[in-house]
Length: 303
Image 1 (cartoon, helix red, strand yellow):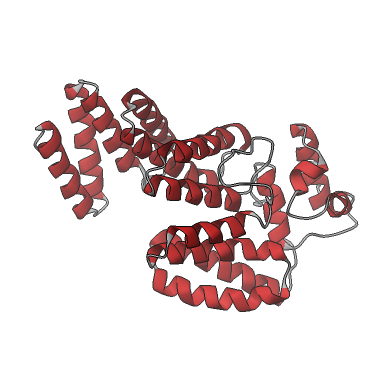
Image 2 (tube, rainbow, N blue to C red):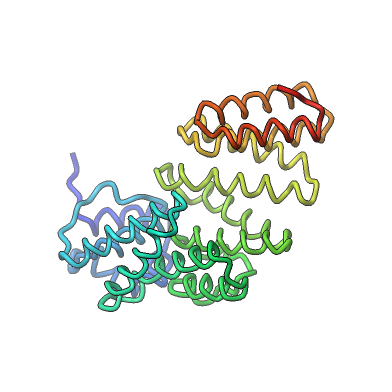
């Protein structure tokens, strides 16, 4: 069995995928630093290693590396911010932001990217002005992708999961402002990127269905029901295959709405029923009631 050190592993994956050192390292570290890492002359910090692996479409589930007490404390605080955002716990998020802000004063700019993103999410929750939120999101994405203008998809760049989340948040902002075409353009970029570049992983399992769900919502605003049905079906199949039950009932509901709008009421009833049952099974009774009411009021379907 072959034995790998970190640099060997990164170099092998990079060459296998046909990426240059500049492709992988851009905005994370210099290509010279990546060269030293690949040659075993330098050991990356935990955060840089994770971001390099994500650019390669992988997760760092292979290597454990020694880090300082400060690096580990920062890493754990950032993970806590991730959980707070996922749970919608914005009171705790605000506390963690203050803590991480103090820790990142002694680190490189890279560790501040998620901090800026978390600040934008907190601002969103507090009802800040859209321009202020956009300014913070652009500040976050420019840490690693300084040329991104917030509108033009960057098909030439490799992306980390943090970059994907930030671009997704920018698309969400456009959708909230009813700038649907800009939102769809960015979200389709992320969909295509994750399909083509990202390996199966916990991060992809969590984020890819969210992108499909967003697309199915925003396509409804421009009445593109055939696309909604296709996108939602992709999401349903992915969620079932990889066990993401959080987004599954929402995708089933959007698929049912698309089928109803396309005149396929019999098929729509089946998927409406599945979505409502799953909401109830997951103790999301308020969502289940809203879904049932929507079926009744808009399509005359009762459960």
